[in-house]
Length: 252
Image (cartoon, rainbow, N blue to C red; front, side, top):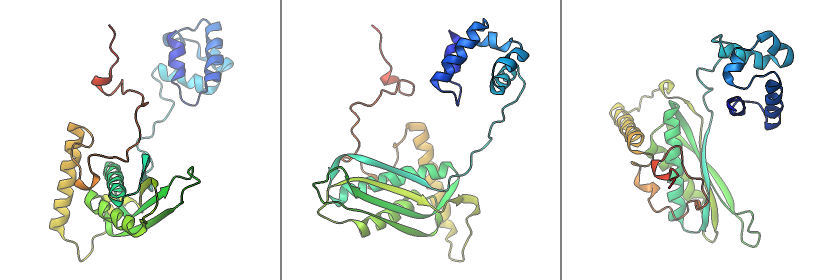
């Protein structure tokens, strides 16, 4: 019934709670969302919680549940993945770190923020107990908070170069942007090159615009690579039924 499916989408309700709630509503001959809308609010209040009473009022156009207009700005942005296969070469690690830093920078600009420092970390697999273990991280401060992908990638690679060691089979890397602050509140210094800053802002705006129109990753920096031999295995990934026309199921 329509009501059953609608209730399953309500927040903060477990499956067990949904089932009990549905059974009680059906016992009151309330089988659809419309039936809930026209139900007696007094009866709903007597039989159920104040949450459902407010839901009935919302269905009747009476605002009861306030919506957050904007979320709390993030203090950090983390992008990391475990590899589909272990890697040993610096080049593969550098590619993955550049890719993750690029993704983190996109999120940063979407939030309208700038980062003051970049933390990069690498590690081997803790599940391979018979192999040498190694994990290390390093924080690289920026001269000035920035949302420029090229600067963030450069800082991440500086950190990676300092902590990378040969002789290990690496399974995971990650990039953490720290010290976030609103981009429009970044304090200017006497050494700012306004022309370079304007060029940087323009380049990032063009990159984001192209990726929005043409799809994620359509335009990126060369350091993030294209082969991604370290990428996660995706053979068992659920198809993108709702976002990709090419993955829609076909009925014959």
